[in-house]
Amino acid sequence: MNISNCIALGAGFLLTLVIGHFLIPELRKLKAGQLIREDGPTWHASKAGTPAMGGLMFILSTGVLMIVLGWKQILRGEFAHLYVYLFALVFGIIGFVDDYTKIRRHQNEGLTARQKFLLQLAAAVAFLSLMRYEGMLTNQVYLPFFHIGFTMNWIIYLIFAAFVIVGCVNAVNLTDGVDGLAGSVTLVVMLFFSMTSALWQMTPLGLFPSAMAGGLAAFLVYNLHPAKVFMGDTGSLFLGGAVAALAFAQDMPLVLIPVGIIYIAETLSVIIQVLYFKATHGKRFFKMAPLHHHLELCGWSENKLVLVCSGITLVCCALAYLGVSGR
Image (cartoon, rainbow, N blue to C red):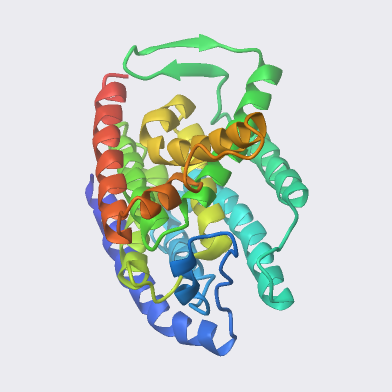
């Protein structure tokens, strides 16, 4: 990591820590408490009422730092870091609407699945169109480790890219079901993107993942078990948008496979559970899906889940870095 990335990381940590100190009491006053799924683990019932929408703390801090630390780049007409932030912010707004709807209705259902999908798809298409217009997106699909690429038809590539983005966003959202899990895993992913931006001297773009890494580290101070605040869909959809946007902004979407291995495992567990349930007329492959709930029912503590999943992500990110460093 270069000096500017380190400054962004440190500033992201401190600013998020301060924002969280003032935000959490305000969320309690607003009674923005988490509503727990009725079909989730029974011991999660004790989490009911914990303030949600805590993702606002790292969303706000990162936004401030994109302006303050990226001001010189903005004056030079370099907007990559702003584009990535604004794209993630659109998904955060979708999550905020979903969270607010749940709180207002006092039930664990906000936007419908169809509404969320259409909004996310529209955001993905808009981002990809902007990136292509700015010349920051190619239809070359780079293969990590092999250091080769192949060209796809633009229309096919854009369809592929849009669904990868929507899939990534929802995969991160599924991972957010245990104290500290989504935040710790994504912290490692953000460090990976910060390192690759430094490797290829993409200074403006590197500000975003570095500030996010600092922000997530501070968020975990409040979110590790027992959590004082949850990020809510506000935070998890923002994180999903950030991860997907960085992969495409650095023009290597396939790197999402190794660095997002936990997100993929969580998503596959849900797909397998649903398909197996239908095929066997009511039997379950896992004790409960997503995967983190299955592991909880197998006796894993929340802290163990966070440690193992973060460790797996760290190893996969290290391998991915080696796989792209010779690009």
